[in-house]
Image (cartoon, rainbow, N blue to C red; front, side, top):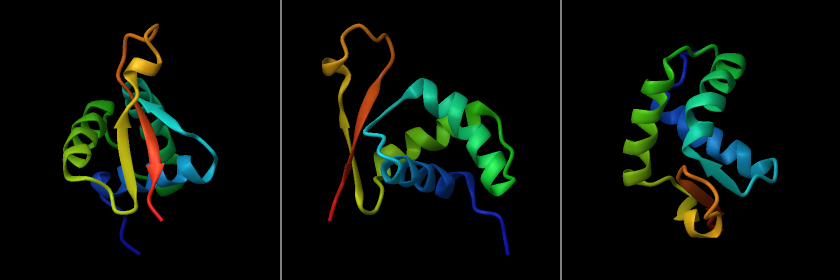
Length: 89
């Protein structure tokens, strides 16, 4: 079995978050949590910067079955970007 790409892991991670009841994701979590999750679950190792770049590209392209909405205005105390994870049925 081949290892998934960093690009595909971004989408898999987001769907995993939704399955576990997480409704929001921040740019900080992409760089801190996603690399560790990918290494632990799929043995894919890449730098946080690589995950962040692939996250930005994937955000623009979209995710099948998932929409990201800018939720930064809901959290004005945060200095980082926050997105709401919305599943499409």
